[in-house]
Image (cartoon, rainbow, N blue to C red; front, side, top):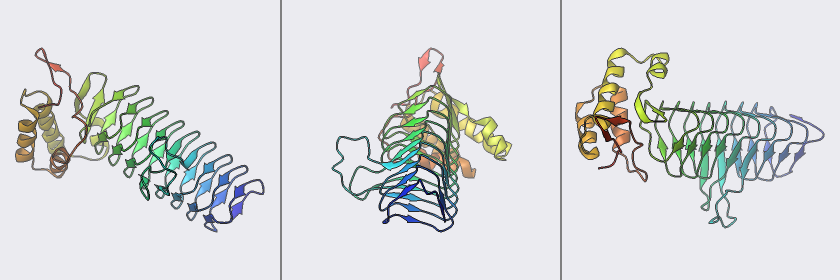
Length: 267
């Protein structure tokens, strides 16, 4: 175990023998650091942190510190970070608010400098949060989604699998899986990302059709979702339909104007 002589590691923390902790890093009591993890100098890891194997945490990042929530009563809670994650400089991940609740970052997530994941968020495997991407409490980010720099998501929003969000946006509604959100709203499927992931042309076409039903048809949202659910045949299409039928606390993100009508995503 390579713990620098100038690191501060509480005796009640558990650091795997193959992990490393750099100078001036602080690891508090109750924190757990997995095999091969690399904690760079000046990192702060608070109680309740659970850091998976081979994860890298870069200088001045803060992990599992107190949630920024006035309802928090100083009760035990957690921030769980999976294996092979990369958390860059000045990024922050706060632990859950409710007793024994947790903030979850799954395997292979990358957070660039200054990104923030608030209390009780769930970021699924392979997601990418660019510089200064900001998630308020209880946001869920789907597998391999990309949130570009300076974009902030309102509490309880859902950002679907492989969605791509442009930079500098204020996200106040749910962004469907496989779609691309720009300044004018949900513009269509994330075609470039889908191609790079090896998604075939038939599936991409089905997702385009689903987007037209949701955002271009003029149907009430409930009817559009019912049509998508009935008509999709591919695996990704069925995953989109399942996501659309899940309970939600936010409205669907808006779409662009079409024939003089703004598509709002509401019924």
